[in-house]
Length: 169
Image 1 (cartoon, rainbow, N blue to C red):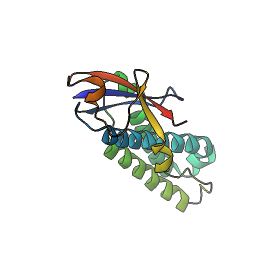
Image 2: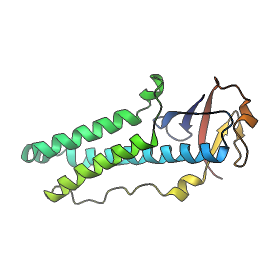
Image 3: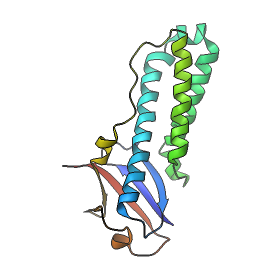
C-alpha cells in the first residue's frame, strides 16, 4: 500500500493519512481524498462554532448538564479523530468513521435544539462541487485525472508520498 500524507495548502491543521495501491486511478484517489478533506473541514467548522456559541456559555452547561456533556464528548471524539496528531501516530482517516462522527454531532445538536439552547445557523455539509475544484499536487506536479498513481510514483507499494491540496486557479 502507498501511504499518502495529504496536506491542505492553506491550513496546517488540515492534514491526514490515506492509503491506496499504486495502480489506483487518480480519479478514484482524488474523489476519496477530497471527500475526506470535506468531512474533516465540516467537523472542524462545526466544532469551532459549537464551542464558541454554546459550550462557552456557563448557563448552558449549568442548566442542562447531560446534553452539555454528551455534546462535549461527541465534539472531543470527532476533533481527536480529525486532528493532525493522527498523522504522527500513523493512523489513517476513514470516510465511514468521519460520517459517523458527523451523525453523532448532529444527533447531539438536535437534542440541544429541542431544549431551546441553540438557535443559530450551523455550517452545512460541504458542497461537493467546491471540493471537486481542488487539485492534488505531488513533487511540484499536478496529479492529472485520467492517469494512474503509478504513472507518477512507480509501482513500489511501500512508497510514502505527500500530496498538497490546492484550489484550482
